[in-house]
Length: 127
Image 1 (cartoon, rainbow, N blue to C red):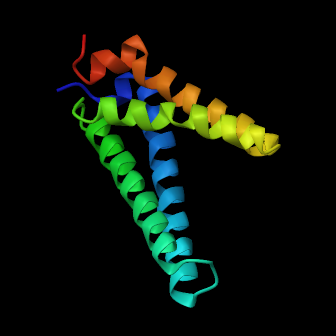
Image 2: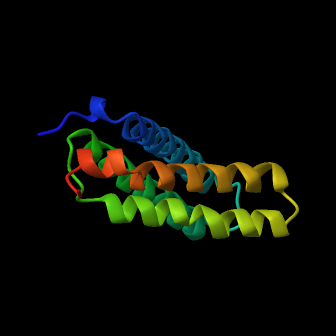
């Protein structure tokens, strides 16, 4: 089995996926807290948003763990989630929130580029 240390792009991608996962878990906790304290308009919507954030965070964490072990099982899911940053950035830009849109685009494109890099593909057994 190949070691992840052979691929700098894959190590950076694992770090980015892990950081995104931690961020999503933090957002899920914040949304859960808002739902339980009734500071939002709908408790059900808040719980659904918290569950979605936690679910996507779990998928990103599992993807990072899979890549760290040299497996490619969740690569498609990770690429899909990262590509979803493009429409997210678009709607942030439409809302005139450019300071969030541009980093979302950069993060999504960078992570996908790192995951599809030839050295990353080789380490996780796709070459």
